[in-house]
Length: 511
Image (cartoon, rainbow, N blue to C red; front, side, top):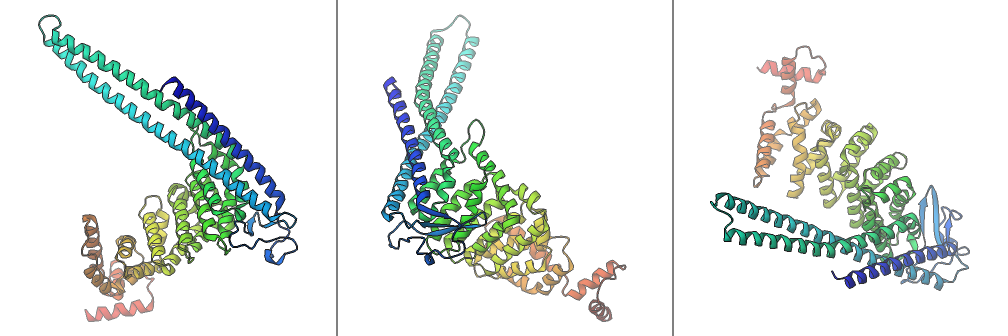
């Protein structure tokens, strides 16, 4: 890169940084103006906004981006409405200017992010090329040394020519590396500097929290741009530290507000889906980090946030149901050791999880059932959830739900369910109630496996199916025989009831 190119790029980077800071400052000003134009307090708590025409002036135009709504925050219903003394057109202007600022800021961030990623890839390719060149030169050097050792006198003309070629190759490689280094390192450093400065101001000025509180009156594009800005900067690592993650961990109001908006959105009629998706995407970025995920599971003990997410999976809205599952998967699968050691060690949480997942398996639509089975099988077959596996496969109600799903007409759902059913059957310590159900349904199960799972492509699945069928075939023909065999093997066992004793006597007489 030439001197003038470097200077031009540096000037452009400075201009972008200056423009982005102007956008942020303007956002602050506009949010301050909105604060004076919007009622956000609990003065009209628990009362529909429409009934307060003397307090608020609702804009009823269908194409209006301004929507009155409520946000439940810190046990208060924060009513968001337009102050009656404020000109409606003025609010339009504020919202429109906020939208423009967010759009401009997003463009600068995405351009710098792309430049940073491109520079990183270029630098990586350059290093890889230098490494290949070095290996090639090493081979040439080794060949040259071998040739010198084998020659009987002095350095031959051929060896001299090869030596010069080696020097020239090394020189060209160094020059090429230098040039590629100039073209990659400058954009990388300037792009990183711009993004670091932009996000430092964005987070330190608490812009996310302030914008979230204005969600009911922002248009969809603004909400989407907020999520894009957040996702691009939140996970940035500076000096081997996730500084913005640490910042949000110390200032938990924002993630608390995200969870509350998410829950309250399901109770509103207007724009509920778009708000849920945008807030859900922001929350997903937060849950990728253990300290913020820990905050959510600790908060659940006071607010049932996680159990509400399971309820949201049963809502008729496909978008809300799917997004809820995405969040649930991140909570339970991203940090499995934390969930196992800090969440499932509480039996109440473990039982609630099992009940919640069973509700999805029983009452969800096809997509919901498929996602729930996938989550459950992943956890049960995982190494970190032994207490969940033990509790789940010991309950007959769970076995009944799984056997019901085995009869589903969807082959994909049947196959996913099989991965859970096989754990029930293969468990060497099955309790009597589980054995009772399996024995009573022995013939039906054998017939089911005779008809289904015949075209399995994976050898492991075929072997698993054969193994499960073998165990089922080895089960006693009836429950009475099972108890009879148990009593014969353990004469000291006196816990069987009278019905079992009578069955035992009948079998003994027949023998």
